[in-house]
Length: 245
Image (cartoon, rainbow, N blue to C red):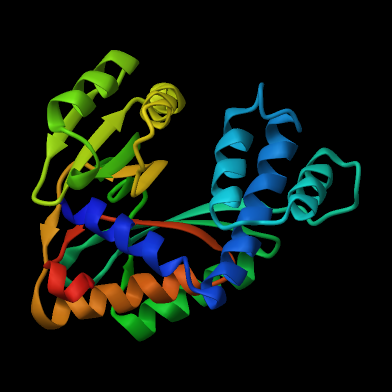
């Protein structure tokens, strides 16, 4: 698998831990609230809310929590106003990192993220220097043991996927964001389990990192992800399996 997809797969395994689920609930609540505020509380007409609900259900977020988050976004219940901020960062080994935050206190979030960077060897980058290295795409990863390559390619491409790459252990399917749900549904309808299925920022190029710098960049990314105001972290590293695992 590419570095990006291997990392996404490992993140999904990690999210099974109870301690991580608590943080995932918080992040899902924020995303649902902001999505409902920006586009309304009906997922049928609000793609961002649909994606947020999918992620919430993946971490088994209770239905009551989901409904409250939507109502806070639409104003039916009192709630916190969140601001979206994107930080562009360079980490150890020259790895490009994008950090998306949702916060009710921009000064607090910026100070904490700068503190994390100082502690873990990262630096703020100039505006546009990192974001230009990523494209928004739908990403679906399927274990090779789950389905024949030709059959999956036929399903994915007929449903509107842009590309499918066969790696050592998995198939990687990329889509235009607007076609992601259609392609995912086609795969689901064929009873094929996905390791990763999300709209994400996919790097246009990757940086191979090994040894100590690889461990340093993973420590930086993990600390950023663990900070409560951070929603998503995207990075363009390619790190050996034994270090990722």
